[in-house]
Length: 195
Image (cartoon, rainbow, N blue to C red; front, top):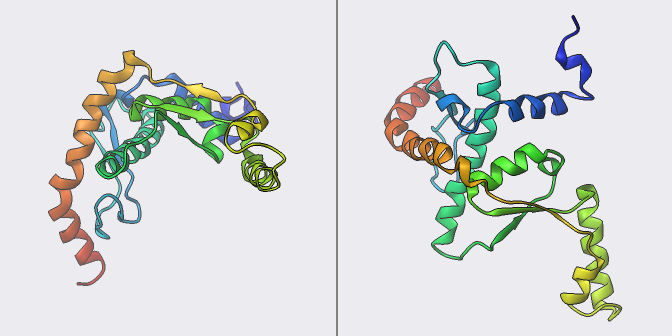
C-alpha cells in the first residue's frame, strides 16, 4: 500500500493534513520553540527548544502539531507582553507561508484568542500594498476607505470557544517551562559552550 505522503502535493500539504487530524492540545505535549535561544519577551541565549510531556502513546503527529502550537503559544506570550504598551487590534493580519495553511491560521486564532485575517494571493501582498500607497499618493483613491475598495475579500479565522480550555491548560504549562528550566538551560548550555 502506498504511503500517504505520496498522495499529497508536497510535504507541507502532508504536514497540514497530519496536524488537522490531531485534537487541540496535542495530547498534552507542549513544545518550547527556542531552538536558537530567545530574544522576546525575555532574552536568554541559553534557552533551548524542548518537547514536554511525551509518553509512550505520543506519536509523530502529536509532536508535529505541538510544534505549531508551541510557536503560536510563543506568539501569544510576545503579544501579551506587547499589550502592556499598546493594545492589539481585534483582527491580526498575517501574510507569508502560514496563509497557505488554513489549519495553522485556525490554530493561531484559537491560541491567540483573536481573529486572524488573511488576504487571498498573499504572495502579492507587498506589490498590492505598494500599489495602494502609490494610488493614494497620486490622489487616484481616497486614503484608507478607498484603499479598502482595492483589497480582495479576506478570509477571517475566528477563535473556536470549544478549544479554549485545551489550549489554556497547555499555555499555562508553556508559560512556566522557561522559568522553571532557566537554571538548567544555563548549566547545560554553559557547559556545551565551554564556559
